[in-house]
Length: 296
Image (cartoon, rainbow, N blue to C red; front, side, top):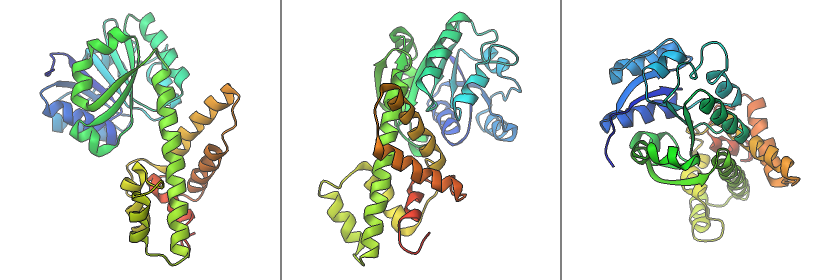
């Protein structure tokens, strides 16, 4: 599939949203408008992409056929889809919203209902990737909502992703994403403890990572975060604060299902400690600062 003639707007152009917009622009798609609560960020990106930087959400909708949202949390999502005041829903008939944030599944369900009431369509485009993949168009996408809506925007999704899966109705992709991040966070905390204990025992940590990679201790997190934990390089790709938030979403789902998840609870508690220590904006690999000897 190639680029479409649809005008694409972005709401939320931080590290992920901005790089997704850059990629689509490079691939020949029409990025028509970018919006962020930090006006300077939006204006700088608009200058780079030669597009609008509207000062209202309604103006983003007016300038776009498809709007991709990459916001921070449930509250931000409800704000941009507000039923009153400035909102993406203003004049939204015929617009399709692709919502990429990791938020509570019920919020996606609610946004779909609000969008349809306004004559628009809504799709979850949950991402299991980071900044580099956003820029390169190699995201892993989990999509939820009506399947015909998914199919209608598939050229955009294809450009953004190396792999994607249609999960099911609204809310289901967000459920899967919550579980992905819950397990990733547990793996990250476990790796930090394994390497931290190895350091305390005086083991060669390069050797230990090699052994981990060839045994049942292997994980994707070992590949992405292991060396960073050792050398204390915690440049942020996925923050500890977001790790806490996402583990909290999974734990809320577990409560609703009547399940107790002690490992997920312990992991969230560790990331909460990061936030309390003023380290919430470190990458998730920063959890090693709590476990390596002499660091905490």
